[in-house]
Amino acid sequence: MLQFGEMAAKAPEFVPDVKTRAWLAEGLSAVIAHLGPPARKQQWITTASLGGGAPRDLDGLFDLICAAQEHVGQGDLEFTLAEPIPGKAPVPPGFVALGEPEGHLLHTFARDKELALLVMPQIFRAPALLLGCVARELGRMGLWARGEPSPAVAQLGSEVAAELAAISLGLGVWVANGAYMFENACCGGGCGINLRGVRAGLSLPEASYAAALDGQRKGLSRRAAARQLETTQETAFKKCWDACGGDVAALPPAREAAALRA
Image (tube, rainbow, N blue to C red):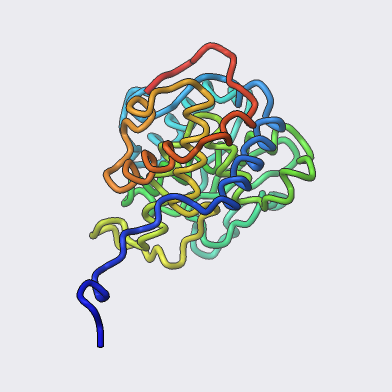
């Protein structure tokens, strides 16, 4: 016979287990070392700090990515945005995917020194998902620009490495907000996107913990760092912030002057 409370919904686990927390700290350290100076800036980037909201079309997306690139050490990286056209190859001949493009609504392809971002048009229906994908691809492009990854970065897997790189560059808010959509397989209603077929590198607890580590190594207050996080993501982030403990001390410190603050 069931006792009172046994059928009650369990509270979500927002803080990863100890082993996962150590793995995230080690992974974050590895991508910071690979990215170099851009990952050592004391910056925390949000749409507000870039002067606007989530883009609604290709032109707006291009402008947002360019604006963010100026703050993450990618001002010299040029890219082209492309939408799929029925009956034609998604990208021109010679371009190859960086990482694993399956299950992504935005993904980077490269040909020598050229970059192309393939954009699925439905992504504009879900702003949090769009920004999370932009953050991941900025992380991916940053890693690519630095050349062959170290063994420690390679062991993370391409998608985890890209999202941790994005977080280290100051895009943790976008990664965490996007991660909640993957976790729920729902955008909140009305977007028409089948999120069960969309992939992410980090779960919500993992993204929140990595973002909390990054915020603390950059000397932000919890309140400032949590600004622009949505409700569930903010709860997860704050719980992770309190659990960071000694993991922060193992991370390379952020020393360069802040380019942006939330």
